[in-house]
Length: 218
Image (cartoon, rainbow, N blue to C red; front, side, top):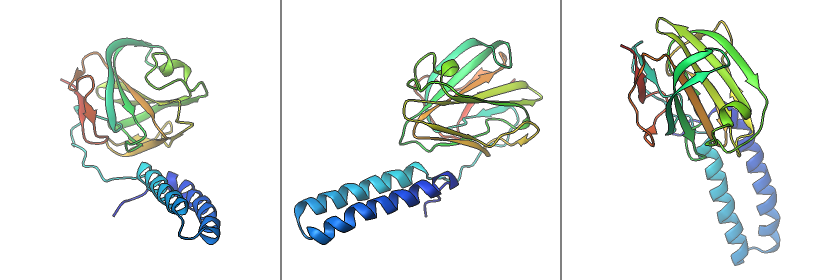
């Protein structure tokens, strides 16, 4: 049975109401015609697409404090060494995961530790793979501290994603694999790691949030 994320309850309900209001009059006035069947079929497919977007599958996270787990389902689009100016304020390794509309959109903690920073930034809605989306788009930044240092990750809105939900707050205890947020309708997540982290994924590799190991510490 498909488990639905709580962020989808209201959207699924109002979508169902809207589709009923569209299809019921059509069926009453034009029952049995080919165009009512087409509209009903398209409505059904649209409703299934909305439901699958908010699916919330169980994940089995590796329990090892030396591992960094993918925070999202998607595809690795960036692996590089960068300067992170917001909180780390220094060199680090960045891994970015792009989430398409067909991916699961639950965001999960990549590591365990203490949440030491959380901040929401309003911004633009550039396409999520745009180089400036990390600094100019609407986004929420979260930093977790553990024995390996500071691990920072950022939810970034895209051209379709118009709402970022983040449950992480300063002082919270982070647990690798547990959800910390949700992004609606496609976007990306950036992860910033200490320089001694060994990246274990490659560009264009598919990731499974809460399960795929994207890096490990020595």
